[in-house]
Image (tube, rainbow, N blue to C red; front, side):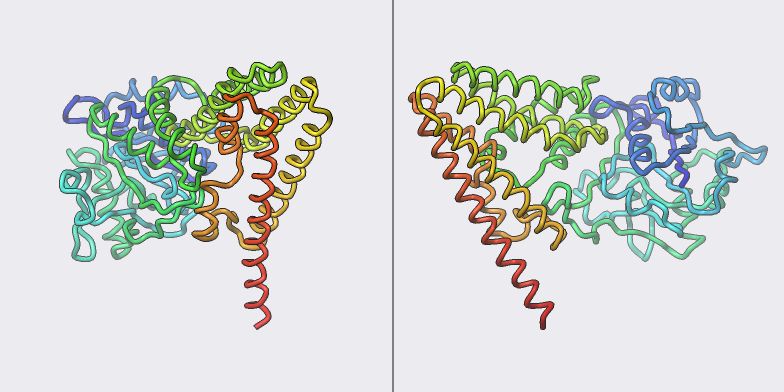
Length: 437
């Protein structure tokens, strides 16, 4: 599929290209190119009316070597043209360079075989948002164009760039005229987000000036937050993570760099646990829990997902169990015999059972066990996990009872695994009974 980004709109408030306004540390243009890269679109054409040099300078700044980006030309009749158009007979993915849209939306347009425009009814928007963006009339209702469409080359070439027009408005009206109002009303889409494990309405943010950066960052951060969390992650880590991400998203730091920082901090905690410096160990362990949430938020806010990020869960488990092993080592050196190592062994076995039960359930039901029902979601708040274990250990460490604390979290994990096995068995047995009937 080929992509087209409209970079022709001028911000009335700043008299500059809207697509070059920086939101959360990157321009809207770069954000939209990153979204297309995630969809494995290799050829992107940019519609430019003025400030061509600025667009070319921005393109050169990109480090994407797997994407070919070209600026469209105009025919003698003032029509949009690009060599990419001749390479496809399928609809082209079109982005309005003024919009930030829900990350789930582009996937609905990828490799689509018909023209389609994503719109939202004006009546569903807040009063101060109803005059934002491009107004479209379709099906006898007033909509706003949310910045994404699948459009034919014919509808693109029908736009007369010699006129002082809004390109997106012309493109969407051409789609409606050519194909009989093919619209995707995003207010009617399913709101469940499987990545974040929660209901989340599809969002659209129309950018008019740099002053929109604050509002857009806050909304992007809200949309980057997972819902199924344990109590420390929700009540303690979450507000701290959002505050930090709000500021560091303006920096050139990548999610992978944050992950590496987190791993270093985690193994510093391991060293302190092993050497008996328990207070600094707990401080670094708690800091690890907070930093662990930053890379995911940074990745979602700046559209910087990577394959390395998917390996984060493995590294999380490695350093978490290095903590328990380091605690056991320290306690053995303090004369507690081999019991601490036995407790570590139980924790490791419980972890293996946890992985096996969770993987089996997801394979059978195609959803995470702790997100399957309300009881499972509620239990996740208090169940044994890295965050809950560390925060549970804090009072034991403060009063000098690490040994008893290690026993407690081992029993705690055992109860958690028993609950998961029970709930998995209940749900899978119900499925088997339905199939039998």
